[in-house]
Amino acid sequence: MLIDDLRRELAPDRLVEDQDVASGYSHDEAEWAPHGKPVVVVRPRTAEEVQTVVRACLRHGVPLVPRGAGTGLSGGANAVEGGVVLSTERLSAIREINPLERLAVVEPGVVNDDLRAACAEHGLWYPPDPASAPWSTIGGNVATNAGGLCCVKYGVTRDYVLGLQVVTGTGELVRLGRRTAKGVAGYDLAGLMVGSEGTLGVITEVTVRLRPLRDPEHTVAGYFSSVVDAGRAVSAVAAAGLTPSALELVDKHCLAAVDQWKNMGLAVDADVVLLGRTDAPGAAGEREAAAMLECFEQAGASWAARSTDQEEADALFAARRLAYPALERLGPVLTEDVCVPKAAVPEMLARIEAAAARHDTLIANIAHAGDGNLHPLLITPPGDDDARVRAQRAFHEIIADAIDLGGTVTGEHGVGLLKRDGLAGELDPPVLDMHRAVKAALDPHGILNPGKVIP
Image 1 (cartoon, one colour):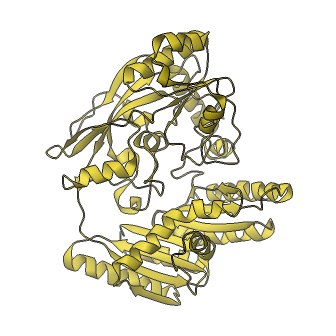
Image 2 (cartoon, rainbow, N blue to C red):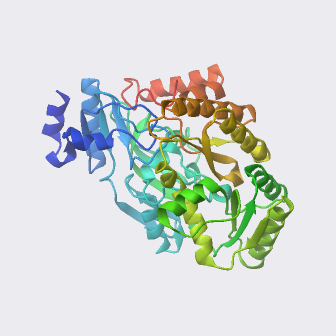
């Protein structure tokens, strides 16, 4: 039996066989995505132990689902019935921070904010900053190609992954990528692993690119009477040639939920708040902040100003990060993650509002608006099955609208289980066949996170 093999080859504390404990590893934060019950959860401490687990699963034909911190929002880390969940939580060492080469080497269980804090001690910065950065891990960020608030200027996780150590679907422990600033030898297999959601290999080490610490940011806030007006301000910022270090949209539903939960005094006289930041140094930062403020005002802001109170500005951005868990307190949340061209942001926001009205569904809006990555949050009353059905219809309409506007079904959360139909709608059949061919080549026995991503 698989369990017997794992007991022989691994220390007892690596295995979680108690089903009450194991159930906590059975799904991520995508509450609406289905999940099975794992036969065992394994928490290895070394890459070689990960290899041992993969090889045992191969021998017994048992599916294996890699899991980071479980903060995903698409069901990508959800357990497969009768399979193994491999948690990387104990692979949590920061092995190297190299100021000269501006890189770090970390294990996949390192928490994003912990890496950022460690880099800061060397005057360096790791840019990808998903809203879950205080809890999510680098391995999970790589698996989903996570984005974040500053990606409008600095890019997503893929832009910072130099190299990986991976256990393949055939049980080999291999290194992909490089440590050098440049390198084009062979296919970009490391890049292929980024965003593959555990379907092509199990990540055991990550080498990431770092940047110097930034100058202090200038913050601009604007209040708008509708998400569409706020969307026009986003388009205006892009049309003005500005590249903010963050441009975030938060609507009144999110602010009210956060304030009710954390009592942060966030009540504002507006339906939507747009938060912009620039980290350009010196006078250039002053000019960019002034230009962004002008864009807000010309787009119809009822109030707009540059923040002179850093604590107040930080509180607004903290509210943006807390929006999802705050809304979860109101009822089950179905999270969207569509991304559209910046010019289409106003129209996409209008279509989201129309879907909410058409299906009688409460939809709160948060967004990395500066790069067109919108996160409509569909909230249903607990136990209301009719509301759930209506929300699911709205969910699928929003996906279709994003594709219609030249966008994509996921900007940073991944496909997982929730977006498989959307992926089929976005990609042409020959392209889907290419995905299936890659999967078959790297996971020929089909044990790695089966049933996820590719329809």
